[in-house]
Length: 364
Image (cartoon, rainbow, N blue to C red; front, side, top):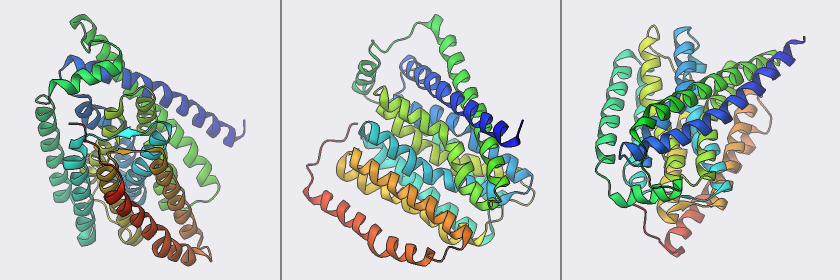
């Protein structure tokens, strides 16, 4: 059997695993949120988000341990960009996503601060063991605080969520272990599916002679973001909007604090940072996080048009990475067009929306 056929089979099997895992994860997480009297937003920001980041964790730890720093860090940076532009974009195109007030007030600002802090650490000496330990401790503090806050949320949030599930939101104690089992099954399917898909895609890319950093920023990053994509899309289709948005925001925070924290701890000497990542891709990651705040704040939701804009930016970013890797002659013209026209026009449109669009009450 030709090698490319085996790689293609791995990609197909991986994709099927992602679809099944996403469905199991959303259903079980929804039921557990109700049973534990914790809001679906907190479940999305923690259990679902961290679970769907398992592929990023596995790939980054393995890459960092083996000395493939570009794949280890490129995977996290590329995944965070893909989570916002691809995952949120596609989910919003399928069904507009309402944004919880906590996302605007707390979680997106935390992602921005973590992204800037990561860039600052990397700009000094790379991600060392001391930096990694600090990142991981911050993750533990965030999870503890999130769970405590979620248990204090108003009963109306849980009632609205129960209506979306089509029931009273309760779960019999005898079914609790079953839901935990389905949750673990979903996580395993997501992790295995993403791993198989990435293995097949990377084998195909290497056979075509693609650069390691490009693989980390594109194929590996998108591949390990597929659990977030499938989970958020399925949650969006089922009306579980808090899980759809919380999954992405929580995953991005976990990627920085947890995935890189653990990855840099196990890497001999930490994780060095290449110049391209430091000067181009990490600033783009910060910009995508910043882009969320005005869109979330002005519209109180991500509508289909904004989702389409996110997708267009993602395609532009992937094209830019490929142009850089091939030293395309029109790369400079592309940079001028994006920085001089496209991005300023987007900011102008957001500004107009801020002053002219009707402002709806953010869900609490």
